[in-house]
Image (cartoon, rainbow, N blue to C red; front, top):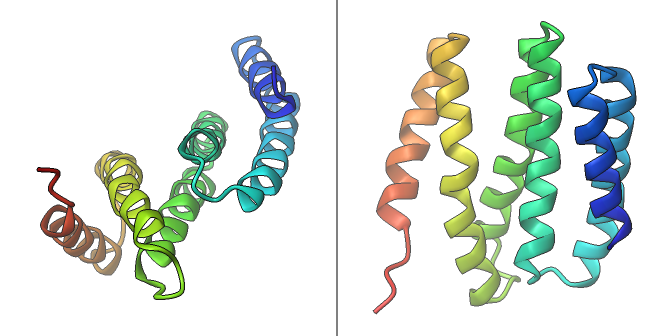
Length: 142
């Protein structure tokens, strides 16, 4: 088992035991580990999904602690990163394809969260525009 997997498991265990500060620390450590490995192999979709999951775990943790703004930020980070990857010309078409597919996965929790915790009109409008753009740009596999 990889170090990041152990850290996520320990984070989840701590979260389930309501030891939220410890869970938070494990999730942050997992993110650091995942970022190092993912930078070395940026096309590894398993590392990417685990990285996104760790951020989403932190979002749930902050929501549980009554910090919705912080939770929203941790949902935005992977979404913003996928958007940037999908737009930069220096990345391969394969990586852009992965980023485009993943954008929808990062957008859905943001939209759900914004319904639960109303966002400002500008943020909501931006999310809706992004949803339309993501749906329009989803690659079609033949």
